[in-house]
Length: 617
Picture 1 (cartoon, rainbow, N blue to C red):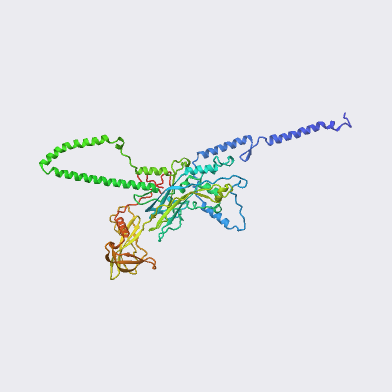
Picture 2 (picture 1 turned 180 degrees about the vertical axis):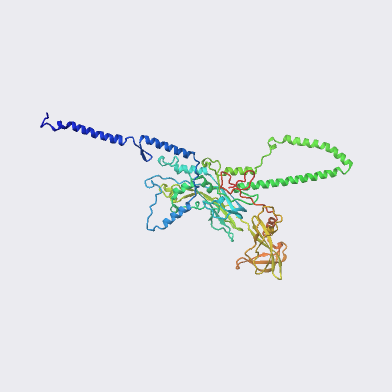
């Protein structure tokens, strides 16, 4: 029997409980069965516990297949600096000048940093040596750049004059000075910076003076880097902080803090020499090499003279032995005693001779010179702080001109690591904006005279017709060629003609390179032939001869005596030298065998040496 008017909660409590249980069951079904809580995220996807195992197995198989495949070569790296620079420049060129481009500061702590340093002295250079070389070298026929270096472009044998100036520098002392200024005991502990304490080379600067016509020297002029220097644009000297290119000093320090760059600054590559029997070495070493050759030649001549003397003595002895029977008897008797006396005399000398004199002092050889060169060269493992000898560095001048005289001075520069900042003491304020700290200049070298490549000498004259016979000598591909020309008044002296040696090939060794045509043009015009009557000699003897008047520009007239006996001593000496050189045999040129790459390790010599020294830069 139902209870009417009872409590609602008591009446429907069972149904409410059943409803709640149903809802919970449905929630559990959805969250725990239909939507699995075991799904995980992997590789950008969601997987159940079973599916993830299958996915990983598939990846294992895929990676296994890739490991079994042969590697696919990547495209070779191609420098694209030129295109990037062009794009960068073109973008900047379209910007209005009124637009301000924000630039990073030199240092993030330049404003708040209170550190200050004394700028160290670089010091001086000494032991300067200089040498001029005239030779046939492989001269580039294309422009050299950082992408196209010397060994990688086309070149051809050609005549060249270049001067090498070498010097020595105490690099250990430089390191000590930099350390003392930026990280030494006198610097506050919180200011010490080992990065600043490492000197980084910035430049080697060569300067020259030219001897003028009035026997005075010109002003000092900077000699540009050699034409074969592929980093010559990078090595352009910038001394003011405000004139540095994009990136400023920090980028420059990073680029120059490289051992290969240091090699190219301090010990730049030399021209590959093509002339037979010639090689390039630093002047001091090359002079040693030449001295060895001269000593060997002198020794050879002494031995030849000794052999000739011995042969003459044997001939005289043979003639004396045949003079008479009595003489032969006496000679035989004396001969039997002579060896005894001679050997006794030799024993006496041997007895008093000190033991150390018996051992001949070993002379320096070509191999010793090349070994010394190898020790001088900077290599990838060179430790400048432990060098026991001063650093040898050098520079070239390949812009010299024939028949001119020069003298040189050289200096070395390192970067100022705190240029453009306020980290400089008051006493060094003058160097605040100086990018390069220079050493002192060396003393001026001795004068270097560059000989001419063309000379002409008047031999004969036809007085009535005023016709002069002129012999012209031209230096081409390492050899002097001469030819006679008949010149009338008003005509040019010399012309381009075929090379007789190339046409006949007489006496020319196989493989020898000779020019097909030779340019004998002098640029001068015969103006007149005049009679000269004067007095000469200590006893003042009368002379009657002719002068050849000629001009290069039509304004200034020069003169030269006709016939050998009227020439000056200098002119006669020069004629003798070139005539002698003309008779020398023409030898084949050396082949540039290392066309594939640049200098490696310490094999940076030009030309051919002995055994193993044929490797070039």
